[in-house]
Length: 313
Image (cartoon, rainbow, N blue to C red; front, side, top):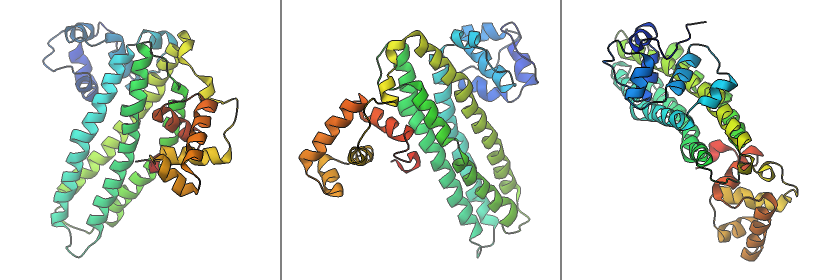
């Protein structure tokens, strides 16, 4: 196990000893040129919560946070860090890898279909990640922020945790495995392979970064949010997870169409029922689940395996 850093350790030592911490430092908005200042001094100077910064750094070094530490975190700082990580992946890292792959195609056999397949598989892989992170940006992170602001919610962090596990299964991993196999096993032989090697190296590196990113959400964000919910039970809605009155088969059909974004008339046409019947079913769904927002119904449908998140727009 690697070193566990403290607030009094020098930031320059952290950067020199743990090169991977450069990504963490950047996502917290901390600059280089830190001199001999301690980690705490650098964090305070740039208005970054020191305990939260250290929790992420030390977790990346293999140190799991204890409950006492989780209670001391700034969840707002952590959410900002995770959002910045999303921006890094989609605004910089993934586009740069795609650019390298396209440039490498210039040296491939013009008759080979493998280079175009690689681009297609890469784009599919990026799309899988995008679905995951878009859900976090639009639903999970706002939920955590609302929780901290004392806003009552129809859902719980456990529902997001369930969805997070569902997305982090073999589906994304399989896409990446297919992509790596195309490059490693089947790319047409060429002497000009520096760009391709560099792109593959970046793909392997981002695989590790994404795994670390998801682990931070699973092991720091979600447990810390659970602690906040326990302190404020008014935020929790067990009816949203375990309704006292189950939905009928037809109500589930209506819910699936609602989550797909269809209007009352469109649902009526798809299910061959009247618009008034659709409206009645919608009222019953809201009453039974005690959920009245589109986001809440979507999360309920995902958690209860009524829809596949990967097929949602």
